[in-house]
Image (cartoon, rainbow, N blue to C red; front, top):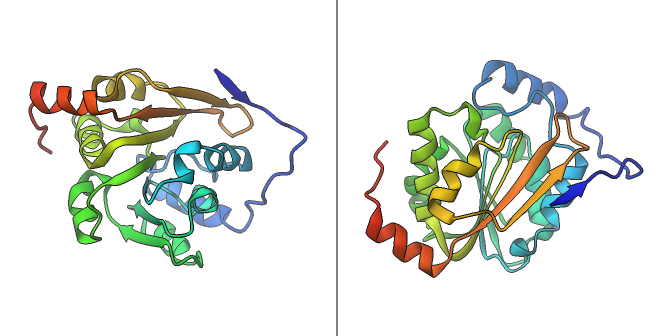
Length: 216
């Protein structure tokens, strides 16, 4: 297991986005994972993921005010597209201030992922990154979201999520099998863990023939 803890590194100031983030957290406590933005350590871990370097289409679920979004854009190729799905309107407004032609911001629920992708002419995604806290979703919502993530991910694609709790593992393993990689980010408040799963052709065949669609 990889552990990220580098107290000597510089951190990115969060004072400019903190008021917006706090309002979003207190107004939407079940949809926002933390009361402060993601740390620069988490941003560096995300931007170092190999799966992003060749991705043509990336989906980010629950990006917040854009700290992780900027990290993803930094790692992605120049001709790629990043579709951010954010339910908190004030957060979405902050995302729309990011000056990058590759970025598309959609205000809506990740539970409607299939229709959002169709509306933005995304056939599928090479990488799906989620900051949504699965631990606060109901069992039905969690299964619906994971089913949608699996279905909208291209074969060979990667599902990446960062969580404060590991409860997402039971849900994701049902679809993807064991995670390919787990990384602790201790220098985050609170500390969290990054999980990476890959969607293989074998898994695609197994899921399509042995499970029935989960309806919202």
